[in-house]
Length: 256
Image 1 (tube, rainbow, N blue to C red):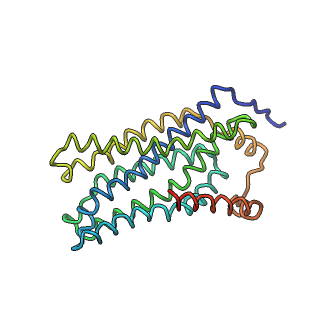
Image 2: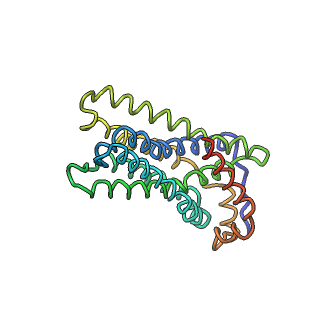
Image 3: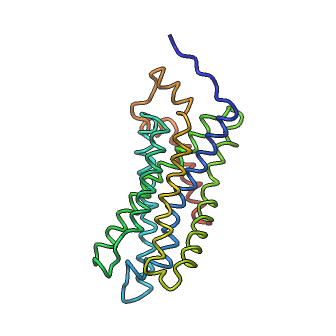
């Protein structure tokens, strides 16, 4: 006998949207903090080329490496989100991205270990990008699948508060670290914003772990209707929408 699923109440819907926004804010903090550090720190400590312009270009190229990993992460993590559940994958993406950020804050510099320093930095950046790729779509999906049909756009939109809020936190963290460390900023002060990520991840996990699984996914699991190859099915059924979304995002990047 099939189990009847009650529609989530308004408080649960709001909690889902809030959890998605908080988690996405923290993950984008982890992702965007790299860009600030690339401008003010990494050129000097990880890419000390003879020409400072070359060092800057290398630092920002590694920032871009995270974006290259995001589509692959979206496909892989999206697949497992459709197979094992939204909540579990969102907890994993938040945890791994935060641990990568903290690990960057503990890395030795080029002056200490040579070329191993930028290699480790780029590796952590790629892992960050991979898991962030699965975060944003999953967070939107969690909020939308909790929301009533006529409110999908409203509650799904809460997730995108993560980008400006994350950047605000990044700017504040670096300003505070600069004020606290003073002349020692390049020695240890730059590491503080990265290590703060551990605190933020703790907050994000507290919020997300208190949220139940997506009602829509729970229905599909109970009925045995989960897709075996979600990505392949999406590409075969909705390839026009996927291309349209990709084009819109490329356009936004061009004019941003």
